[in-house]
Image 1 (cartoon, rainbow, N blue to C red):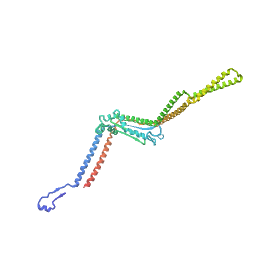
Image 2 (image 1 turned 30 degrees about the vertical axis):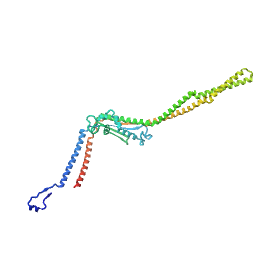
Image 3 (image 1 turned 90 degrees about the horizontal axis):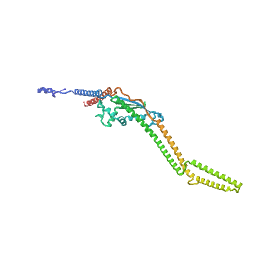
Image 4 (image 1 turned 180 degrees about the vertical axis):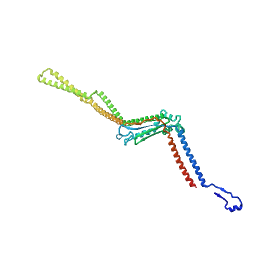
Length: 392
């Protein structure tokens, strides 16, 4: 666009040259700015995609994946039992399966499979790229860093519809991947056995305490019974009381017999010199009968008095024995129930040795980065156009 003096006539009169100044067209300036911006955005897009391609094809270490799957089962149908942690209403051990999945992503599992430093050696092996290696600038060097870094190479999920758990672990060598998966499989078995033992202990602890209390009570009664027998000189109250009654009855029979003899002698031969001897014998038998009767029921120290304490302890012993028997049966039933509810892992597939690396998925990674970068740059370009148009 040309700009001159206010009047061409004035210029002609003065004879002076009119200086002509040239200015760029604003539309051309805007078009040039947009072209520069688009070139910059295209350059950024190509750089990001190129860097992604270089990393995936030239830098990233190939990773092998080993996987296994399992189902948590019980010998007792779920509708007839309670789960060890929660009630399973759908006939599935979903709570226990979720517990195992949670354990697989825990620090306890990492500590168990890395007890000899296997996980640390895998990530520190030569040939592992800087983004996958541990310790490194990107992964860190502490135990917490190792735990977070390892989670990127572990995938554990539970399919509620099929009631199947799937576990996949990655490593940089086929044998390392299979060894990691095998250790994790054994760790799952150890955890389910620990859950079983904990559940069994929780179910039987009360019954075991009752058995121990009943046994201690029976022992206490037996000790008291032994002491009573020693102090009272009574071994078997029934046998000894029977013997005492039998002896007293025999003496009473002898007394009756001698009474008959004396009566017959007095009637037939009143002056018989043997009558005095028979009367003396009758008096001796009568004294013995009185002594035996007093020994049986004569108050303190008698057989009846000594037997009473033994009979009370016999009753207490019978009660203690029945209590111990009932507690033992309850404990046996509880243990049987715990055994029926015992969980176990049924393996659908065991850890495999991969033949070829599954990761990184180069084509997918590059495509995802390209699409994401393109979307972000497009958003940036659209916003800049809006701002540019607003300024105009």
